Length: 384
Ligand code: HEM
Image (cartoon, rainbow, N blue to C red; front, side, top):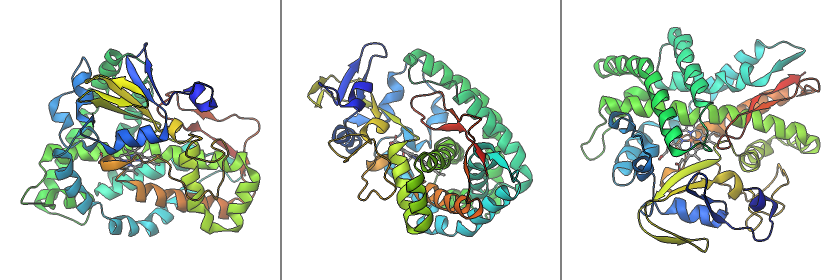
């Protein structure tokens, strides 16, 4: 990845990695090729190639691990319940929550992740699912546990170690699953206007989701939609701090806030690697890849591809067009992208409005997520 990012010769867009036994895909074009062809580059088949299998019941309803046609059925149902309107209606609530959290910070300085970037997305997901506010702390405790375990998870590990870690994380999630199951049963009896009620009632071609699918989809929202958004908020703040001229440009022209958020997703990609498995022999980026091989598609590297982006290592808050792959591409394109964009826009505007002199604390360095597949700040101490 280093030689690819530096544009060294030969900078190969696809490489086999002896240590992990996987193929690394770095190029933008090659990444798009993989993500556009779910038949050849399967998401479901990734699990089959791991030596330890996750419990089948945990995979039901997990959009990320499904291929067509199962994926299409579930995605249609989910899209119905998670529509653009549902997200747009959330804006006043996201704004109120952001200010509620920022009202509580120390006026001299605060750590951004614990004060805002971590709690905001988890509260939003809990409210979206319709979980009672009184359970917020309980819910957050389980989520904390999930991320404490996930933090130890590394894509540099062998597939065996990854599968073992995954099984451990899954076992730790049982109380959260039981809690969600109870909640679903209650919503089936008396539906409200929350996402879980929407999911249990959604119907496409006479098909509905079963409880397992709703539980697992809710967990996917937490896994795919929480820490990624946390990193987006932290990374964007860090990028703007590191580029003061760009920050002032955005402060003066707020229509640039959404543009700067897209650039942050490109420049400092939170969900930096996606796994796929070949179902048939293919040639990709000049490499012949047999069937049944694991691929890591490095979105973070593709987003710095000099063949696709001018000055790829420059943070340009006004970059347009910006065909970054930060939310993926193709049939698995992030369902939560509108929500993440909304939270990012509200949070960046609130920070610019409320703290004109906000900057990274010169006495306390930020810390970063330990996994190469999750690139983002873990803590970001700020001075007001
Ligand atoms: C899928 C990134 C926020 C829910 C994805 C994928 C990426 C991604 C790269 C594609 C995975 C693949 O192709 O295998 C991000 C980033 C976010 C974010 C960077 C924040 C900045 C969210 C939020 C939610 C969410 C807020 C929901 C609350 C999902 C779901 C999928 C997904 C359900 C699976 C879609 C499918 O397989 O059809 N996300 N995501 N994400 N994301 Fe996000």
